[in-house]
Length: 194
Image (tube, rainbow, N blue to C red; front, side):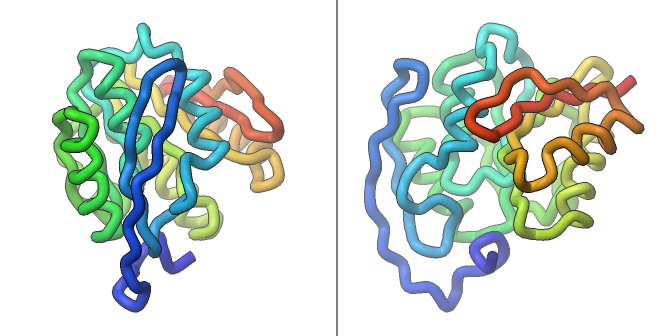
């Protein structure tokens, strides 16, 4: 779990991977001490393959960006303005390298949950960190609603075995949350303020 917060004790060993998402070729530099260093994880792939990119407009926040696959894919395939945040310094540095590598422009910076986020978004898209525990996960999901514009949407992926059904139920107490797709146990959920 330490990869979410720190990597000062983990020796860096960068490598480049190639990924194709919905026909879009991307390259990413990955490293020790970050989430999914071996390649694009199945949850993130499921999320990106199930987003209708033609409906993603305006300002987008990639929350917990890691090395950057969500935000970079969104920027590469849309006209959106993309911000990307993570708490992990190594992830932020990799996301910046990967934006340059894929020839996209994004505002990439460090934030502890939403502490450095000062604006509202049309979309917040995330593969949230599950192993941080239920309290922090719920802070991430529920606080996102405060950072959405009037008709803004939170889109996220969560595994059925990691509480997807209870998250969907609990989110529906404060927002309109809908399951839009399932892929081998991964739920893609969209939530919008009432």
